[in-house]
Amino acid sequence: MTAVTPAPPSTASAPAPADSAPPSRSGGRSRLRAAVGFAFGAALLFAVAPLALSDFRLALLAKYLCVAMVAVGIGIAWGRGGMLTLGQGVFFGLGGYAMAMHLKLADAGPGGMPDFMQLYGQLDELPVWWRPFASPWFALPATVLLPMAFAFGLGSLVFRRRVRGAYFAILSQALAAALVILLIGQQGTTGGTNGLTDIQGFFGYDLDDPVNQRTVYFIIAGVLLALLALARQLIHSRYGELLVAVRDSEERVRFLGYDPASVKLVAYVVAAGMAGLAGALFVPAVGIISPALIGIVPSIEFVIGVAVGGRATLLGPVLGAVAVAWARTALSERFPGTWTYLQGLLFVVVVAFLPGGLAALWALARRRDVGEEQSRRGWSALGRRRAERAEVPTA
Image (cartoon, rainbow, N blue to C red; front, side, top):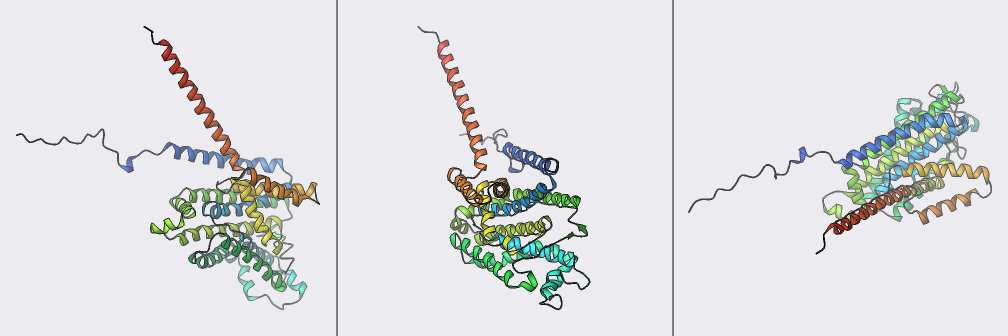
């Protein structure tokens, strides 16, 4: 008997190592579409809008873009993480009040006290917790870090106890109502119902100057694009996939060895930071921050914009937030007595007929194009088969 030696493995059939695998075409196309989309958005915000809109309408667009920043964070927390956050007004208000406090102190007179404190006459000197906000090195980071720290503390308690669903939504909404009550009750230090108003300067620049107002708009537009880029990177990372897995099956993710509370906490803190930054930029864009802008109703309007645009997409929350804010302004101008009903009807129609939001229109159009292409290929293949049968000679 002769020994049979095994043949060496064929190099042609051996699988290539993972490191040498070529990049997927779908990933390249996705990055290309994202780059084209960002370039188109930058051209629209930085070139078309300033040329086509008046100073008043451009200031309104800056306000809408601030709302869109909040919507980006809600899209991550709710659209990807399944956390219905009905209290984003809390973080929006924390960032807004932090910025407004610094700007009011910068505009303060010789006494170093804001005008409303002197008007109400309840204080003889500046409160201790106001004093750090006189420094921009403290106030600017606080507009983002303060909401994130508050969200971290709250989220650590809530998610560790596995509070979710409607209970989490109600709890977040109750926090917004509690913050409003707290701000209204401290009239001497927070301005009460009026809030912090008559903000005239922004780091040495006069906000009444149209040139400076346009500069503020450009800053807001640039920050929005940066937040979108950050959100896209987060969504398409391994963490983004894990966040979706927690949303769909939290117990299975826990069984695999991950901590769902930590995963959700990161998304919640990131969304809070985006809302705080939006509130900080909202102050120089509008010149005011008050409890009426951060309570239950504004928090629900944030969520409505995301739902109308499409919470499962990246661009949908931005478009939905801008569309809802624009519709509210346009309807209130033309129909002052009934615009709230029309706005509610718009929301009901979109949710009833487009559960995926306005972004679903793009998905339906793409699905239709794919279906037509497949149908065209099917008819072409059928025609070729019939032609082949016709060419076969009969006996």
